[in-house]
Length: 171
Image 1 (tube, rainbow, N blue to C red):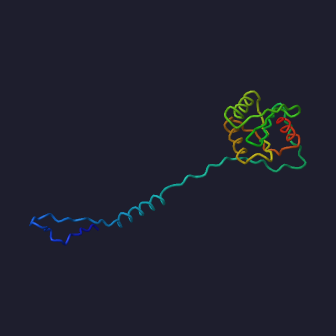
Image 2 (cartoon, one colour):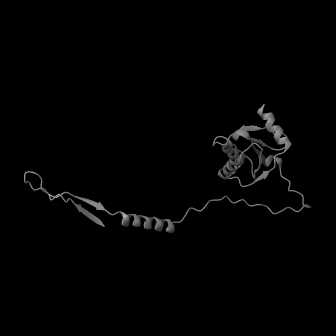
Image 3 (cartoon, rainbow, N blue to C red):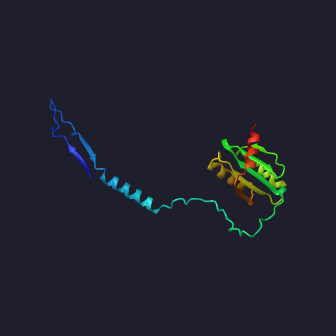
């Protein structure tokens, strides 16, 4: 374990003075390293890792082709279009849309969704992602819906009319 090496000079110098022997210690670090690795493996094997958190999405059953889609009052519909450069385009209703442009901040789409949810009873949000939007935008809008306590939403394909509305609002 620990070892003391002694100087073989005899401890005498010129002039007959007797000096104390100088000794240096050498410590064997092997047992300490072994213990460190044992502790490391013990804690690694006994710890519990974080489980990934997922958002539950309930998918509807496949519709029967003979069934008509349910009718929805267009005053309860808010459409959100995810655009390029982290822009969010939104409008209420379907027949005469007035497009607004915002972003993903707390004063942006979150405020709009919260305000509209307070005004419109049983509001339905249609989410349409453009080809220029990113996957992060879809995750952000789903987070904003959760924060705003909106439980009725649908992911819908973007139409040519929506693309034209986005293009016209950029002009």
